[in-house]
View 1 (cartoon, rainbow, N blue to C red):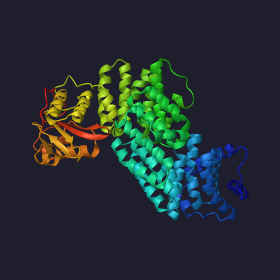
View 2: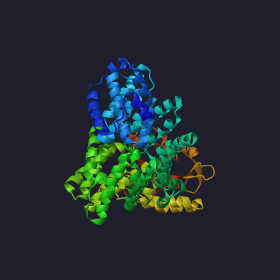
View 3: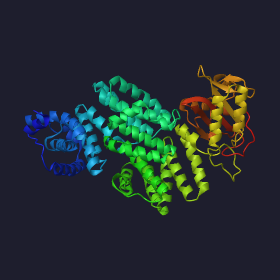
View 4: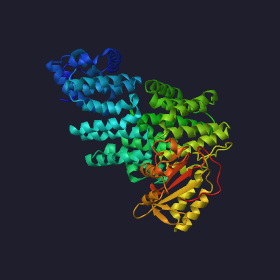
Length: 591
């Protein structure tokens, strides 16, 4: 006897027709119930004791697990039936996970990302109070709800807690999948360096547990990092054997592979590759319903639509998921629920739609809102991407000075995020002008000069030649009163300071000789991110460094030189004459 036949004989027949109407009633009833649900009552309500109901409850989780992959209608009906059993007969340990699963039903059928999450939290609260296992429900909440109702910065931490609980009960496959929302949260809230650090244990866990589905998704992150950090050429990023095999297999791994290719194309400014990747991802996006990456799909689709209008001069027909009005409504709802996660992206989508429609009265303030809201997302790709999109918009409008300033800002922030490939592909940043303030500013830097310096460090065959090359390139930098150059010793990986006569001094010894600020050096080693400080003495992380003792003011620009994902050198530029910006100098002096 099949499980669906068994549950029917136990008094819960699945309707052959009109199951949708029963689900609709269940959704409406559940909304009213959760509004009045009191955790204290369900903590003490009697459990159901009808033998037939108890027997039926044993079938819910296996049935829902199967239905999730093969029949959405059955899955939706079972989730609503679990709710009615809870409401009418009382809570039970076997209903904790099925009640939490109602979230995906609300999301898919009602675009409601709150009601199901509230029900899941209610079920978890009751389970914890009554001493029942809530591991499966916590997992469902993590996968389906967390990014919509909690700060993105909390997802990785919460995923680790859920993973630990699942490992304790021996559920290693679900434990492996907890890395999926964790990595998505990190991608959308932190640097590529942090993403890479968290990716490695995820890939090892997938290998140890034989979870090929999760492993395929993790590998897509690996390729995204490789492309954006210039470890591989963009054209080669997703053409490797593993990626090709994953895409042929379809499912979650294919969705991540195509979506990350689309993200890389968007960041690197390849509009046609963005179109191709999004179109290829579309058949597989059903695996991401209710998950945070579906947000990236919506944002990139809005950008791709604008780019098509820019290339062709006419707006494409609106339909389905590409309808900008529908996407705007979706983001408006998410912003109302969790503004910290979605306001900046919703404003970007609104700006893109207005740009494509030539509605500048809407586009300009929408870009402004997106930029202001993105200030809290400077560590991720969101802030530089929004800044670059705004720069392109203002360039199209003929506001070239504003466009150049914003391009410079975006380039520096891409560098801080870790996207070396993007920085290398960007033209010179607009220099500051018309001010008598001093110091090193983030947009005083010609990015081609830094790329040339990187190439000089990597290709020099002797230190005298190296110094000459870098000195020549750094003459183009503005505002530095000193430049400290460090190179990586190939065999040991140790950092060495290149002094004025070409002599090499180990970094630790150079710190003792006051040739290099220890705090800045440690920051660069740890993060591999750019550091831009208008006044280092105003930053508690660095102002106590003995290197800066006795100074009244000092601005700093420090950055790693990265080639093929390896740090080949470091540059630390200082201006001790004044804070902020400084006059252009003819040539730097070496420490």
